Image (cartoon, rainbow, N blue to C red; front, top):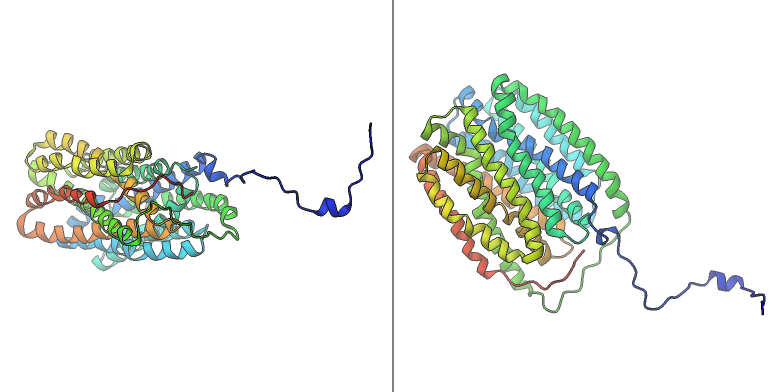
Length: 418
């Protein structure tokens, strides 16, 4: 019964073919890599905390150097213009060849920008320092958004929302830290936040070590288009619509981020520290809304979230210029929760329109958001100098109505590009 089986060397060397076995995808499809997502979200928190310090210290810079609103807007423009100009370029380059340690290197620009801002005594130096922080942002956002998608396990909206959550809470923490540290101790205390940049550099270096083996000698083939996918013309129209939707959202958020402090001080006579805490309430609501928008989009569809997010905020933005101090705080909570929920859905929707161009798309949309915010802040500052800050909020209250353009967004087939 027991026969000896002889296996030749040729048989040992020959490949074994097993039919009907599907090769497993990389770990990205096995479920979210939560540690990596937490790390990239934490890094986004640190990055945007440092960035938000710029707008939070505007009252100090305005008093110290006798700046007008137009000059304040130019600081925002200097910061956001470098980010806007370079983010699509960075995204395009990393689409061709990913750079695992570019995030840590880019954070070095933010590190030096904060140090320079802490010692700047001339308006021109302030602009250069703001531009350096913007440069760090240009390097950070496209590649970190790609890492969030790579670690998503197919839950793209959830991963993008978790990534956005870190950034939104970082933005919200800026005014609080400014009120607790920069206002009492002055402009030189900004240098202390370079320690935050150093922590971010270490975190991003560790993420780079995780990222490097996943991209080593890896080539991504262009996917075959889904038969129900929109044609190139509809894709281009959809991208333009998404940019317009981001315009309405980001310009409104920029108006509150840059000038809400001055609006509260002018209309209600509150102190600088109290106004910064009111700004924190809005920005914290913004963070919460940004987190929940992505998972809801994964479950019910991104178009529905975009519709609700942009248009749902309109009644509250229209009421804000006519509300009292307490009413303004309540309204900004609803505005922040609703209007920010579109961010993740807009970005993921755009990524799904152009599969495997995630870096460039993320760079374009983050860059457009920063650019719109910078140009809008500069323009609104000029208007505020001539008409008053209250008039600016009356005009901006109509911006969410641009969300009606969402009717032109195509229906995307349910397909995974992971």
